[in-house]
Length: 147
Image (spheres, rainbow, N blue to C red):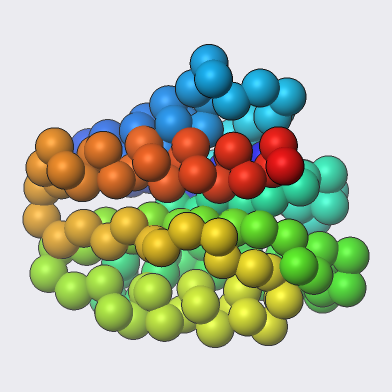
């Protein structure tokens, strides 16, 4: 499983760490988790993964430029080969994440990826329930790869 993230703030970092913790939980066996910053993830990383977790802040009403750059780099090289692969995502924003969620859903629909968990969206500082939801997101997507 490939986790592609843009983690520029302590709030995004806390969410990212919870997602990784869930995805790498000891009870989830036989899933290799690869973490890549959005600006360094490549089409080869995507082609090698059986599923994806995406994380981004909401910037100026949209996903981060880093995650958009990732999608721009991998879209056509991965379009046919990754159809149907499972994914999940999380978004953090100061006050609104609607545009970021819409952008991710639009691009992943175009790629033909299959969302296997509800997105985790947080505005403001993540609370305990938000961190637990991120852990569940990571665990759910990873566990789905073991079926």
